[in-house]
Structures are given as C-alpha cells and as structure tokens.
Image (cartoon, rainbow, N blue to C red):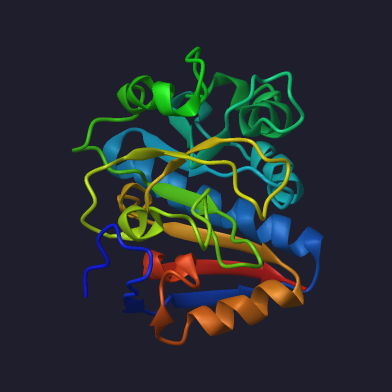
Length: 245
C-alpha cells in the first residue's frame, strides 16, 4: 500500500536485521570499527573511493574514535551526514561538529573529505537545494550508512507523528533531503534537514549501532511486520545491527 501524504494511512513492513551482540561499549566500538574497515576497504578495492553516511547523537561518541584509529586510505573517503540540526558548528547540537571532533581531528581521518549538511541559508527549508547539490550524483551509491535508532523507532530525523512522514519513508520518493520541523520528542526544538529513507537506502550497506535493552526491544518489535509510521525504522528493510546492553 502506498501511504502518500496522508499521515492517517499506514503501510506495513518489517525490518530484516542481522544482529551482532557485543558484551560492552568497548566491544561494540571495536566491532563497529572492524566492520567499517572491512566494508570501506572492499569499496575502495572495487571502486577506488568510498562514501559513507554518518549520524549524530550520543552513540557515535563511543565508536568514532575507534574508527579513527584505523589504518585506512583516508584520502579516498567521502563522509556525509544523514541529518543535521539547523545550527552552526559552534553549537553543542551540531552533528558536523561532533564528526569533526570525534573523527576528523585525527591525523589520518583529517585527510578525508567531509560534506557538512548545514549551509549559509537562513532556514532549513531554504537550505535544502544547496544541501542536495552537495550530495554525490544520483548514479553514485553510498557504500555505507552508519546510523542509530531512537527508542521511538526513528532514524536520521524521521520521527513518528510527523505530518509528511509517510512520504519521507516511501522507497520511491525522489526527494533526497527534506526540511524537518523541530521534533517535539527530541529536545531541543530545532528544525533539521534529513535524508529520506529512499536516499539512505541508496547505500550498499546499512548498519545500525545501538546501545541498551530498550533499543533491542524496539528492534525486536520492528522485526515484526507492522505499521511503518509507528516505527519508521521498518522502512529501511534489510540492515545489519551491532548492539550492546
């Protein structure tokens, strides 16, 4: 069923997740770094470069430094963001600032290319066109999307209850980025830009990195066919998951 623009219409799907379980945050960080290296080295061997979508939030703090310690051809890596709050990088809420601090500040990773999502436009809505223009061409797929998931089942900045969520989650949506109103369930209330589900699913590999028993409970619920609007993560389809309690 197609949900269109009507938030009252649901469409049903399930998340197909292959889960790797870790015993601690340290083990999770090591597992993420190892998987990252394998996928990126394969991409470079196949295509000469690798493009990666990263997310913000608290969980990446636990693994970005482990990724940064890897011996990789960093100058061949291109990083993008899945979503961003419409704030400058001097804000503590900036995902770009997190990536620069936790990953790109190291000598090796500093040679990688990073495209921030926030631009000079006054609002997220007026900045969409320029942000889309900075993305890779449509014919170039991402090699890896390394994402998180909220306890409400959201990913990127696609939250349950948003008026246009149905459109943003559809796999045939031609929009690559969308302006997202400040979510009421994720303070502080700041408008954002977010990749659509269709844009993220242009990734050859999608890996969710999760911490906590509540996230596992949500993941298990998402693996049961149900309303995608209730648990947006279902829209991603097939993913890998690296989890620790």
